[in-house]
Image (cartoon, rainbow, N blue to C red):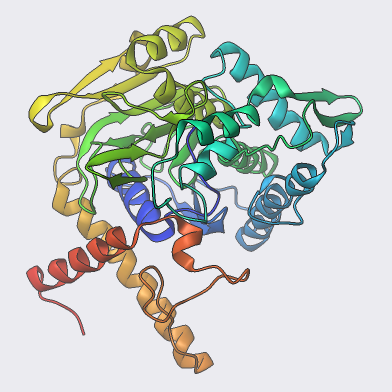
Amino acid sequence: MANQHFPEQRLVSWLLSWAAIIAIGGCGAPTVESLSLNGETMGTTYSLTIADPPPELDAAALQTSVDAALETVNNQMSTWRPDSELSRFNAAQTTEWVPVSPELAKVVAAAQQISEQTGGAFDVTVGPLVQLWGFDSNGRPEKVPTQEQIDAARARCGYTQLEVRSSPPALRKTRADVSVNLSAIAKGYGVDRMAQLMRDAGVERFLVEIGGEVRTRGKNASGRDWNIAIEAPQAGLLHEVYRVVAPGERGMATSGDYRNFYQQDGKVYSHTINPQTGRPIESTLASATVLADDCMTADAWATAVMVLGPERGMELAGQHNLPAMLIVREENDQFRQVANAKIEALFRDPAAAPAETSRMTLFLVALTAFGLALIGMSIGVMISGRRIKGSCGGLNNAMDEGGRSICDVCTTPPEECDRVRAAVAEGADQHGGTE
C-alpha cells in the first residue's frame, strides 16, 4: 500500500498538481464568476474552486467550515497525531472492541471491503513494513531489511487481523500489536467531505482537491467540463501533461512510484509496499489513475492497482466498473498507456489549449504561485517582525510542532528540495529574475 503520509510534499505537490489543474481546467473565457479558496491540511494543501457561486454564499464561513471538517478528519484518522482517535486505537494493546466515531468506522469498513476485492493488495495494516523500509518519519534504513526482519513485520500485518462494526461503531484487532494507517484512503475521504460541504452550501459547480486527489461537479466558469491533467510520471519540478480527463461527477486519484523512493546499492526502492511479499513493488507500472463515484474509493483503488500491476490491476478495475488508466514504463524512458473504455470516454484533447499544456507554462504557473506565496510570507514577516525559516534541507533547521524536522514531516528527500531550489533559480534567470 502506498505510504501516502498525511504529512507529505507540501510545496512541490501542491504547486505542480494545482498548476496542472489551473492550466487545463481554467482555459477558455469565463462566462460566470468563480471563487477560489485554499488552505493546508493533512501535511499538504487543499483547494476548491466554485463556478457561479450562490449570491448568498459566505466565503469566509465556508472556508471556516472546510477547515473545521478537515481538522476533524485529522483528529480522527491521522497517525502523525499521537492523540488522534486512530493513534489511540493503535496504541491500545488489546483484542477487545474499541469504540470509535462513525466516520472512522466508515473509512475502515471501506478499506476492508477494498482489501477483500483486491485480495489484500490494499491493506491498511501494512504500517510495520512501511516503517521497516524507511518510508516514515524515521527515514531510510542504513541497510536493506533482512528476510527475517521482513517476516517479523509481516506477522503484524494483514487486513484479516482487523475487524470493524458500524453499530455501535467500533474496531477490534485479533492481534494486539496490529496497527492501522489510513494514509492511502483518508485523503480521498477528506475530498468527499469537502464535496459534501459544497452541496450542503447549495453549490452546484465546483472542483475540490487535496494534494492532487480531485472531485468535480457541474461545469467550470467557462461552461465546460472540469478538465484534470494527468502528468507524465517522471521525477523533477518541470512536468508534462500526459493525458487530460474530464471526471464529471466523480472522484479521481493517481498513485505513482516516481515521487517517493530512494536508491540503495544501485537499486530503486519504491514507497509502495506489496503486503503479500513485504517488499517495495517491482513493476513496470509507473502510475495508476482511477475514477470512482467517491474520491475515497478512487484513492484506495489507485494504490491497489499499483500493487497489483498492469494486468491484474486493469482486470480488477474492469470487474468493478472503475474507469482506469495506467502508464507503463518501456525501454529508453518511453511510456505506454493502458486504459479501459470507461476512462477513454472521459479523455479530452490537451491540444485544445496548447499554450497551457506546455512544460514551461506549467512551470511558470507554479513559479507564479510560488512567487505569490513568497510575497504573502514577506508581508507577514514585515508585519510580525519574524524571520522566515527554511524548510527541507535545513536552511534554518525548521521543526514542526512535534520537534521533527520538516523534511521528516513532508518525506521529501533533501535532494528533491535542492532540485526545487535550483529549478526556481534557473527559471528566474531565464525569465528576467526577481529581487
